[in-house]
Image 1 (cartoon, rainbow, N blue to C red):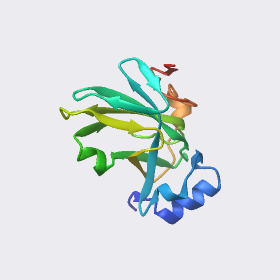
Image 2: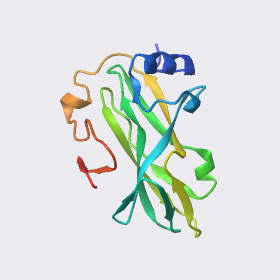
Image 3: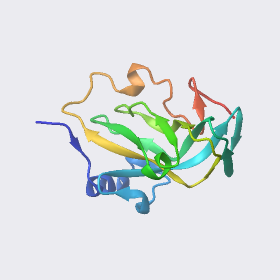
Image 4: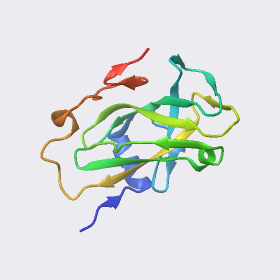
Length: 162
């Protein structure tokens, strides 16, 4: 048996039960094999906004997701930058969404282009792909470390930075 990717049907089924995306779910963000995550807050050089932000070329920025994730204990998430941002020169660096994690995600990006870009609350910036695991972990995220369990907004080192 191999790990498998949740289809749109499975994502809709889980979301209807309050799992995977338990808050701010939008059926228009469901893709054939994932869910497009939307920007809530944007952090640039210590400043946080929930509206529109201009990211200068060469600058690092963080975003929190509008969606509150509730990952099942027998699944993990993988995050991919949306190609529309990659084509604009934006790179993303993401960790896995661990089995049993719940909270808003904080995603890290770099505007590697020389031109400023505009990012806005509600923009679809990354895709969450959910993989079913072969078995449940001995300890889910909250039991193992849980540093970001229950996080809200842009979070660094387990603390909201607002």
